[in-house]
Image (cartoon, rainbow, N blue to C red):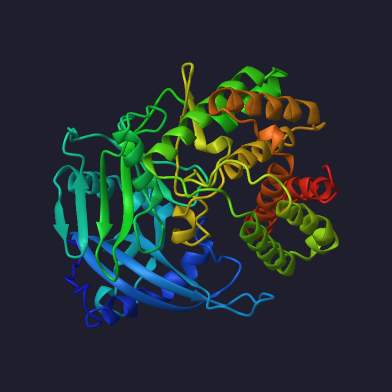
Length: 454
């Protein structure tokens, strides 16, 4: 039997023991994970914030990883994040778990045990679902379920391999559990928003079935279980298929625009709008993000004056629709098509931004701009580039959106250009850090958007 420990998660005492066993292993392993935010910087310090024996042979940890800070024009802020880990412990690792292997502890209370990412272990995934089926507490962890939910047991789990900033387990093609990796205090929008929309009867967003949270060191959302749509295909895959076959995608784009407008209308009803947009403050925030991105990616520097002009135009343009709750990170990978219907998923927003910012009311134009950028991303996946394909999809999406929303994004040119520019700047920084081979895609948009009227 694996060794087990019973840590004390609410006090500093008891946390040093696991760190003695795991510290060195995690410092090497964390930066290599897709969801680790500071992978371009070494971990300088690791602190265990909470540790709970979820069940024998499986530890739940919240760890704070500090890494080398990145200097910015406004100074050098502290750099680090809190991450959620589920670690399996065994004397001997089964061959099927080799890809999940983190290392073998050499000292401390776990000395001699093989440590691995427990989400890859079907047994651990099964027991995690059982926790959700039987709401209750485990140390600071709280497992809750929708009162009307009837979760069956024995559903076979499979961990999705898709590239994402979290980890997701599908159970029997009936449910999907998103386990958040990067944790911030407060209610995660991916629980808050779908729950609010479900209460309104909005069928475009799968409703939460169960979830788990923590109370230590502060209250935070850790994971959400929702219905899985086994026959659905994400918009990115559908767009690439259409491009490969030389097919038109405008009908799908128009229907998607209408669906997104319906979601925005539901969001405005579920969360009171904040009133007219504050373009001056928005422009200042966009310029600050541009300065930070240009500092990190020197290739942006020649285009900064033109990009600033796009943001400066906000001062004199129409404020557009009222600020409200939005998706926050909308692109073709965040929408699913099942039959003739489009569904919107993943309301977490951009994980790199503070939770308070992601939950704050913003212009719905930001979501529209995100989807327009996604059509451009898709068109550039094949050679020769298909700019007309992207242009037609962008037009169709906006037309579908306007037909349902009651206002046309295309008539908010300066506002739409500013938000599309802000999104492209974010993409440049993201690709430079995570996928350098993709950097030419947003840089092409930067060159276009840096010219007035682009």
